[in-house]
Length: 364
Image (cartoon, rainbow, N blue to C red; front, top):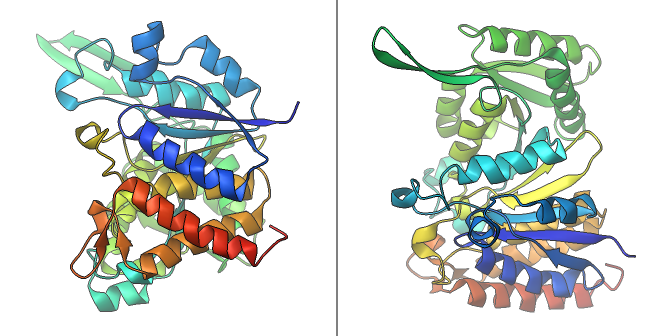
């Protein structure tokens, strides 16, 4: 049986942007097989579980996972369908697959210079960069408790790392940096946290295996400031789970919208899960206002990393860039002088250009 891709659309805008993406896949990878499973609130509604066994079984037989989004409205988080939905679905999924590396590329589209919060000259100076976030350790997976002490509730979340977890992502980061501009910035809070001090120590030890890569360190608060003041200094950034979560979302705003940002997560065996960086956006679900770019670009990452179809991935990027260059915009990146599109209309424009590109490259 041909290997298949497990499709997990999830909640909110997930199903609609996934539907747009699968139309792109029909053109760029028509031979791939896709099988759909339930996860998140929609899974709970049907099965009583956010991450049912049937979905786990589907994933275990797949060659890769293409994920949408999970979660419901903030005001409904107390309801069983949405209570702990993210923890029980995406975090459980990461644990099930033993994902420990999250890769998030930050790409600056010249056509979106006016949409970016950066001033024009600062935007023009930016180079594409990549953030690597460790996924298996840190405060998300450490011991948690809420107790009563001295008649007050006290909550604790333990941030914990071991050397092996840090070494794994350190080698990923140095190898990636060696293929780019030989510059790696490691983000921590080593002036305060013991876990960050171990993080920095392991990064320094690993650096000796990569003498051509320049390693530098930034405290997380300084890194957040530098992302805004001088984003052109970055090429490869590596950070722990909590800090990586925060700075990657901050960085994703720089090109113009969170809706532009794909991501890929890998386990030690190289198995990949691909998903947009944004959330489920329940307020606009079903309106076709959502930008499908992040989901389509997640498909491109999957084609590149899980199927080694580099030309297909490049063609997808080119089609999106050309669509933006020609002035088509979804509402999150719309500005004066451009053409406002629904998610479906934007996807149709991407497919139109993709067909033109692939006709010129029959070897894709």
